[in-house]
Length: 189
Image 1 (cartoon, rainbow, N blue to C red):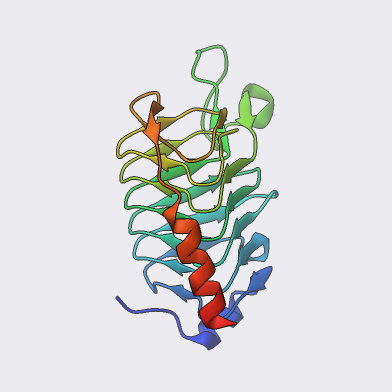
Image 2: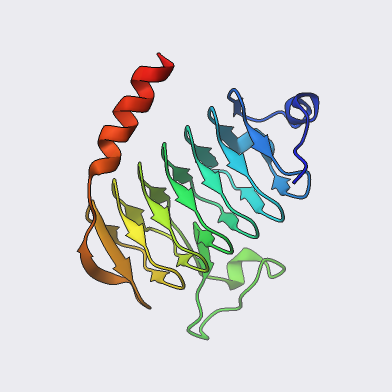
């Protein structure tokens, strides 16, 4: 995988660009001025990051795997040590599918009913391959989402594993990763 050079990254004029940020030269970035990228984050091939007015905030040690997309008008947050596996879609905006309104971005807004709410992916959250995260979802610290799951616009309690469509709690997740985070923090400070 080829990454953008530091000069190329800086030319995109991000809201914030941390140290050791890696973005594939095959990723698509829209509205970089609304995109905050912290240290040691990585975005792989064929990802789409379209930062609306609310922006996208990517914390430290965050990985976004190939073919994933983060799209919408409201803020999308990926906190430190979170990860998004391949082909994950995270939306902070979604059309009304009831048939009462027209849909898609080519239609004037007065004919649409768009659900736009912030999405929060907490610290140490991992989202499995092919999962879809809808507007308003709040995944608290340590949540794990199974592959091909549908994450609805609600709050998900910490350190639980969720799977299915819609995603439901399966079991608790171990917290050993908190000790490993402390060890890493001590080594780099």
